[in-house]
Image 1 (cartoon, rainbow, N blue to C red):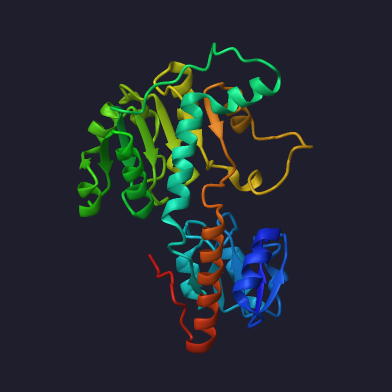
Image 2 (image 1 turned 90 degrees about the vertical axis):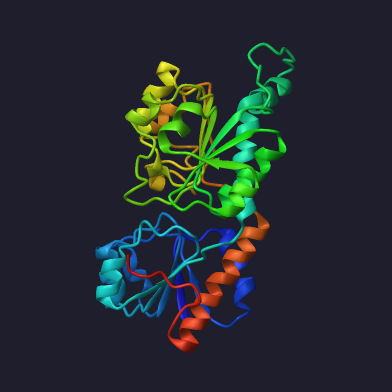
Length: 330
């Protein structure tokens, strides 16, 4: 089957080619997917898209017109996919629902430790011959209260990690998990979570219910928040409200691996250009903010699993008319 791979980076090509083993004809393009570029899929029965590609009704309509029958997402999230439009157009959709519950959990821990102990600032100081410790003071994680929003595979591994530091774990999820409880988490309502969490870390999908889960009202309820961490989806956090929370001191520090308007920023080199997103630029001015560019998933093991799951979805669709991990209509 001929497959057009959008938003392709060198590592995508490397891992997908290895998983493919020559079975499908993979056409790689660096272009992101949206309505004007969807015509690049002409001649392909399937396309492979990434997390920030636009799979709205307009793009899907173009894909349908050029003969695409399958959208294979090489990621878990599918909030950019218009499922109703895909269903109406008769385009099947699939994803990689689980590729490494460890990668993002470990990145979360790395962000917390780096931001707390000012590792990023110390690294730059030492390279300049500055060995002073002023401004690098952190706090012990032991004994602190960690709030975990979302207790799926990633959230449970975050709980496991922080439990190892001797932290108290509060959890929030509409679907409580026995394993999370066994790991030491105690489920609470949102209000208690916000009031008691000293580090609040987000691991939930972006849905209408979770959009701006952290907003002005939520921040107003925070009493002890030393750090807010988001490695889930950018839209879970109201960025403008968080900026005000940082300015007021209700949020002591912020670590992000995702951003509400990351589509025009992340996964590309903009080091020689002016960043035109004023809100993102404002975040970069805070000394207590640490941002990485959606790299939480980026481990060898995760890329291997993503590639093999994606090729598996495409092969199953070609052979049986149904992907291994289909995305159903909401």
